[in-house]
Length: 78
Image (cartoon, rainbow, N blue to C red):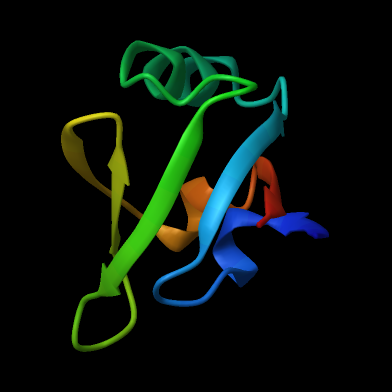
């Protein structure tokens, strides 16, 4: 297991969300509303052709987020 930010994960990695930085508060609130909360398990599916955004699967949902947004998400890569 390796602790890092989601922006450093690779395609196919399964991650457990450890923490989300408190700033910016609007982004943290948005991520929470998408189901990205501490303890949730997500899988990094793919990157856009230029590397940004990334598509993740969390629960039964597919979500695209920017790498800049992924930098505030601390994860444990399984």
